Image (cartoon, rainbow, N blue to C red):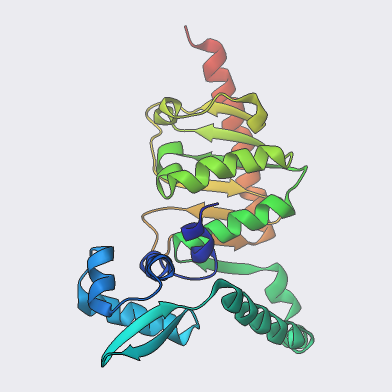
Length: 248
């Protein structure tokens, strides 16, 4: 995982991660110098710097009557996050008493951004180690959200012994990897069944990723829905297998 992606996993947007890394490399810069180095408007840099300063990533200082910005040392940023994590851990018992049991097991969760979606998938790597889940989807649409991340995710999934069965759109064949170490078994749907969404079917939830949704993705943790989608997958799996066996 590269430096930019690590910073984004901490909650920074792409431009804020770029600004922090640029300041770290330069040692310090004015807003104008930073904007020029990043190739963005100076007005937008001020908002980025203000946000970074509020979160402890950037410090300001005056030199020859000019305001400069410099990146907070990485070790100090780490301490800042450790302090925040310790504070959160201290209130976990209280939060657990407030959380309703039904809310833990049932309901909907909206995933608004690609970094949020990537965090969900990173959690799956631990949760489903040595297990299996099923997928219906379009490889180009799914991978196109962040090609670098999702190509690596496939590899990480295989390393953790996570097996997948996939029902893919016909167009997916163009980029579908054949590597057996990925632990994937796949079948293709007929070309007439084309779509841009992806549905991941887990034992206790469903993830629906679709560009047509108001949010980027929805996690559905409703047992009845999980059962329906599981049955639908198995029916389509057999259908796709029959189509392959009878194709000339």
